[in-house]
Amino acid sequence: MAAPRPGRASSMVLSSLPLQMLLRLSGTYCVLYFLATLLLLVYKSQVFTYPHGCLALDLTLLLLMGILEAIRLYFGTMGNLMEAEVPLAASLVLTVGSALLSAYFLFWQTLVLRADWALGAPLLVLHGLEAVLQVVAIAAFVS
Image 1 (spheres, rainbow, N blue to C red):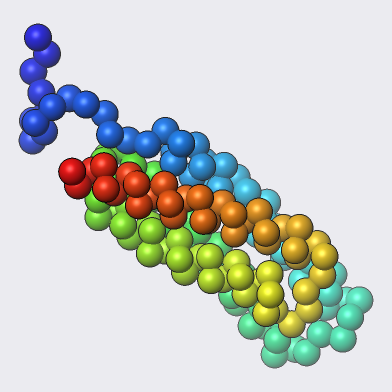
Image 2 (tube, rainbow, N blue to C red; image 1 turned 135 degrees about the vertical axis):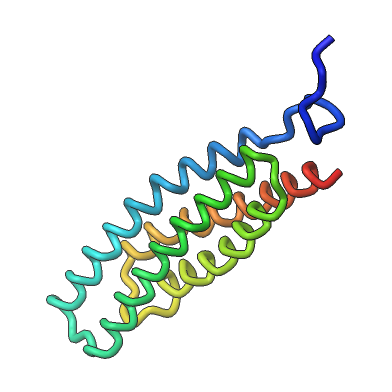
């Protein structure tokens, strides 16, 4: 009979495979989203009348979103694989912040094109699914 791991009552694995798969997919999609949105901002600034202050705001928020996504995905992956509630909860909080930034680029940025909708809607769906799976994983880790 196998002995339980130190600090654990049993050797049952509680990590969420669907959450890990979504985190991986989200990481890839976020890189593509960042690059495509950056190119769209450059396109909009060249083709349309784009106020300079608004362009700086949109670029700053996009950079902030990229940094936030990297930290969020790191904490989410680490928390899920280590079955730790605190990093996964931190990732959940950052998911909410990232979803708000995604909503900004989908609804409230200075110029919203159909391409912004095509890029932003799947990202919001990914954030929603991840948030649900993170809550389920945290509940499994706590119990």
